[in-house]
Length: 402
Image (tube, rainbow, N blue to C red):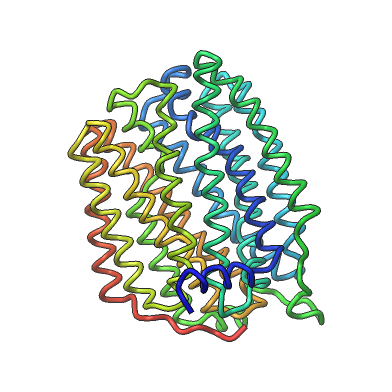
């Protein structure tokens, strides 16, 4: 069987509910990225926020999302209902979008970002656990890769739409933010009517997922994945700094979101192929190549201001994301029992959330006091340390039966 034929055969085997979850992610990312691709520019040029302030806001927001996943993941395991929690999280994200349009201060932006990310945190672990529950184990990497690809298509359509509207409406940030409400609402409807949740793994007496007995069922292989995910997050700070780097390169303000379009096109194009590859090759090798791509991206972004070099660095950043993000999600599923997957994703994201907060604050401080180049050189340094950690401690994890 040729590789092309195999690819289409696998795509046909992926259940319809996973496709629906992918389109839910696509629509919500269109909504979110229309705002997030413009938000750093809005904060700097309209509200007068410093880059350190942006680092604090972005770090706090992303960390909040990841930390909340602990509680939503545990709840989804306890009640055995993942879809309802995911639905609430997507709805909260959709209904916070108007706050960005009316914001007149950094305080309201922070509140909106935190509420939006709480919604992301609530939906994240139950959604990932739902993908793991629905997908047959032999194509789980491909299923996560597909959902990530569709998610990332939304992540480049959003900035592309933002650019078009900014050009059409003469840099009217608030009008673009209002339009972003529409795809967010559509995402909620697709999830409500398009996703069928499988029966819970255990239908007997409810148990506490974070009891000592259950936590002992999370193997050493799982905690190794948690540590690897945390050091990967330290090496990759908020993408808001990519947007600010694009502005420094002399790109007109209305066109700056194209930097996120370029990154996410590469991310979307690479996530499914690398997800499928992860079902067949060494996970450690693929993670190592992803780190090498990020090291090269950071060095390019640190050493060059020209927009052509900027594009090269941003696209390499996207390759790194495509290689690593779906794979890490797959590894969590492979190393945990089915009835504890929500909890497992929650703890994984708790640790990653703390790392994201540290990374974004450090990046913002370096940018503020040492310049943009120092931020990206520091990112490359973290990547090298992460690569060493992976080579020393990242033994091939062994799957756990569902």
